[in-house]
Image (tube, rainbow, N blue to C red; front, side):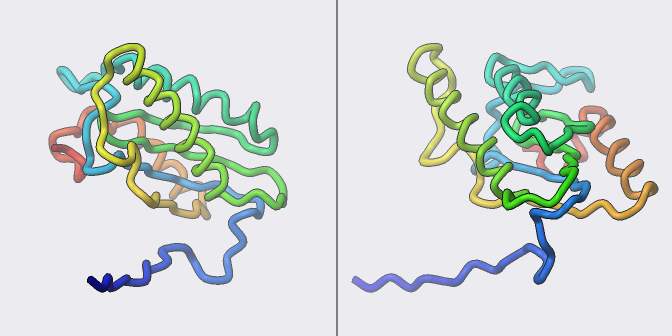
Length: 162
């Protein structure tokens, strides 16, 4: 049997140095948009234990990567939005930071499945890629920050709502 592989389309900006100083908006989704991290009740986010671990892990990112500052973020039942800032040029790219976060949280989640009876996932916790947007203006920053803050309020209209 022969398998045809399709090359993945690169969604990153060509020639942009993702290890350079910058402010980024990122979105990471669970595989198949499975709701693993809590729920929205009366337009309020209620994190479960997995969501609380995710929050602790994100808040710890600046300890792991001292050149990173975290700004607004929101953990939703099946995805995560954040604004992240890198303060100087480094050899570590934005994708390395996101990859470390996904890896750490996947291992923590597997531990929760084994020891705390968390809902199992199929193959991977997170979808393979992530979305990023380079924030280049104060207006863009304010719009995205407000989007993050209001995300639970518009959950039923959200593109990630299941």
